[in-house]
Length: 227
Ligand code: ADP
Ligand code: ADP
Image 1 (tube, rainbow, N blue to C red):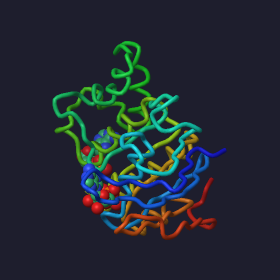
Image 2 (image 1 turned 90 degrees about the vertical axis):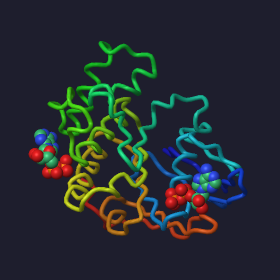
Image 3 (image 1 turned 180 degrees about the horizontal axis):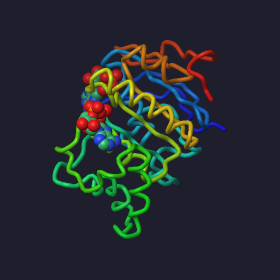
Image 4 (image 1 turned 60 degrees about the vertical axis):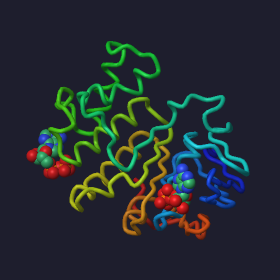
């Protein structure tokens, strides 16, 4: 079924910048889609509208049949930002616990979920560590665990690995693919790397800037092996 429907969606910021013009897109359950394009083409803005962090200024957008952030549980969406954005004063456990804490769960209730999420990213033994003790790749894994701890259907990733070295990035690409496969996720992965988009996704949505818009929507039927 269709998870995301965008019909002529636009975004104009208060200062007059048109970040997105007439974006129309349908994303089905279980797809792994990349948004590929140069800096400023509206990739982040599109993700933020899909997650409900930003409102749309025109057109229609539905996630699971509802406008984002309405009539549905936000916990169905996991968001991984460009930097790991961890709280430096909190342990790995507490960083991953945060979304569950915000939804009112006690630490005791949340424990097994947090442990499950840390195990997913190979960091089961790092619950008591602090972010400063971790490598860049490990911090990013914590950030992925934090996004997965609510067991989302939809994982939105905004240039997550741009700051990492190539080896770490390659490992994390494979880890994201195996998460996607094993959890029945729908993933939207924002990148300006052609390699990354083709390696990861079964569909590449190419965007251009000024104004931000979709210029190609390319299925990759012969892309990365699906199973
Ligand atoms: P990308 O993620 O593709 O680099 P963005 O979605 O961040 O692009 O930005 C798209 C356009 O919108 C850019 O021109 C950017 O400067 C502008 N923009 C982003 N956020 C804001 C904002 N809060 N206010 C005004 N303009 C913004
Ligand atoms: P990455 O950058 O992908 O996290 P690195 O190979 O740069 O991985 O690892 C940096 C340090 O962290 C190394 O000493 C590595 O052994 C250690 N490390 C990374 N991931 C783990 C893990 N899951 N368990 C134990 N040690 C790890």
